[in-house]
Picture 1 (cartoon, each protein chain N blue to C red):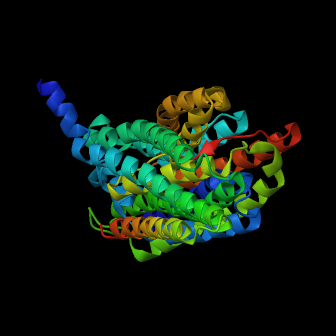
Picture 2: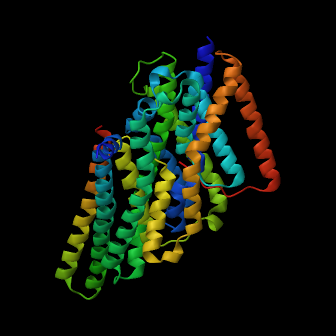
Picture 3: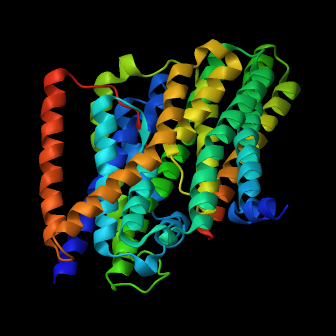
Length: 84
Length: 367
């Protein structure tokens, strides 16, 4: 048990776990939200051609919000990087 | 006087190493953007160079790890750092000559550890730093990038799968301008800091800086400039071979692999983990490829990377140790490092001439 404890101490477990978790959240999260932005843009084009302005507007809004969220995530990421 | 000569040699060698790091890694940073048509080669390379330069300024955590947490800075001398650098360059040269994939970052740390052990014994190693901040993160990071990219591309296909391919492809190509930029930024911040760390270690060893000091601004600026110039120079070589060497992938895969790589490298940099950035980028590319089709991944290349990963640290350490042994033959002054520098330049020149006569290999040197 002490060997495991020593190893955990050496490996900086807390930082490693945080690295894995934050990397997965950032990597997967940004792609997912950006995909929603593309989905919204694609739906906006299709619904506009089908002359459904309300639905097209909602799709465009979803795309815009998703895009802003991606930009915000990038800004937060860079700010966190520079804060240490 | 003689220690100042050695210090100048160390700084020059470290910056040359930094330049070659950028030169080798250009392909990894811009490959997906160019192959998916998200950016023209000239634009992608120019942006990558600029963001590598900027990236070098945004953090010093990795430099602090290399300078203070791998070997005991109190017993290090500039000659030890010099021998470590030569060990790293020699190993990179050998693997380049043989066309084997290797990590410049692992070679650098291996070289410094090897020369330090040769000079002062195994007690010079800070096990907590070497294992906890270098070896384990180096092993885990590419796997995390693989998983993140694989999961990301699966989710992306589910979200946009039923939409028109033209719009989806165009959207991800626009996204790649940003994800490629983030990857270049991440590359600059992690890789340039290793050089900063080594130069800082030499300055501490020379008594020019107090133990535990952060890199001075001139070290940060010169390391940033060296890696950016290397990236830009390497790019023009890549442009000529882009059509044959880059694996084809769609824009969504390019975006996810770059995004996953950037996320892993930036997060690791924040915690001060010096990674092989190219192993991480390759992990992301393989994850994005494997999620779509397992056979799309060049598993042979993956195997070579693992093989080289295992070999690089001990091999560079052995060469670093041997180099320190050779410099010691000439005493503690500057004669040893000067002789080794001349021999190294002759060896590099001979290798380039011989390689040019036999035809250039397709190396996968990595950061």
